[in-house]
Image (cartoon, rainbow, N blue to C red; front, side):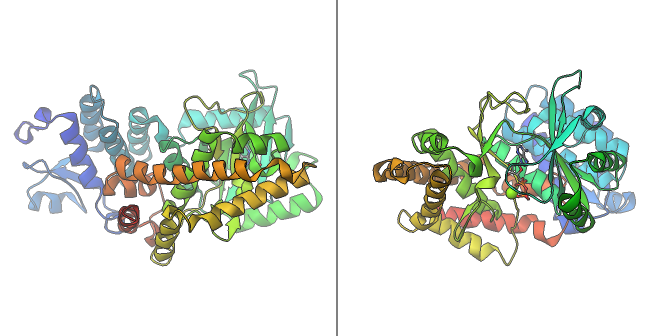
Length: 429
Ligand SMILES: Nc1ncnc2c1ncn2[C@@H]1O[C@H](COP(=O)(O)OP(=O)(O)O)[C@@H](O)[C@H]1O
Ligand SMILES: [Mg+2]
């Protein structure tokens, strides 16, 4: 490697080299697995060694790449560089097609950027342990066909509560968890597993063995299981989803500027990745965000340094068809007057919630509502700046693309570049 002078490169240079190689369009990368570098320190992915040689490149094994990355990132304090390097490692790992290498690369990536968790062997062990000790199952207070909550209260390593759900596109859901986490939101530790994975089978078998899993519930879960190929396993968030809040909690939220701003930030981030299922024009689902309650001792996630609201159950839809809508959604949100319609839907739900809980709607005064709405708008503006400041175009795409998303047209990074451009334009308004 002397001739390539890899040793002389600093962390930032190395991070950029990795990033560039990893940004090869996903479609072209499928099935390719030779990574090589040339004397201009350009790294590229090739179909085979011969092709790399012909182009004047020298191949690097993934182990070597890991070794260099580890050394160069040791004293690197730039988060963006670490993030680029970590995402590139994950991508190379999944391209290698070899489980051992993939694990090695992924372990290093997670070490560099802990928010890029994937299902590691130790996490799988943890899940297995929970299953073994599961004494009870329960369900969300509000109906859901496919969510089961596992209680493992006899577990000697502490009470573990695990949420298990079937999922259509779990990788997108996990990637979105990581995205929101990076933007400072509390999200559950989440893993996606193939339904046929032995751990998944154990888990589903165990669920079936509980007497609670009978009748209509059983039929519905069976149906979901046949339609969906994956399961998602997550920590249960300490708190209450907004559709279960009591009167005082709804008023508490409106009185709390920080939480209101986080609601606004959430709305903008949702628009950015095409999540339709929270506070979106024409629709409002309070079940997909949770107000944290640290006094809840049966759940796992503590919110240190993170948002007071936790986000779950995200959709990701960024494609040619959705982009124009996402663009106009962002424009609407950033328009001080136009955004009111969307925000008003949320307050209509808050009113309903207060009524349903036996409260007086007059408790939510016009004055309180308008102060809360101003904070929400402020949050929307903050979030658009945060996206532009936090990511360059490449990493904006990489965030969604790289956390093991299945390679399909829908997740083409180029589409996310467009999304980013959309945001840049919208911010000028
Ligand atoms: N990780 C979690 N922590 C706490 N509660 C959860 C979690 N995941 C799901 N729930 C509960 O289950 C409900 C339904 O889960 P969700 O993932 O939104 O499924 P659905 O696809 O049915 O909407 C949520 O509103 C919440 O009450
Ligand atoms: Mg939901």
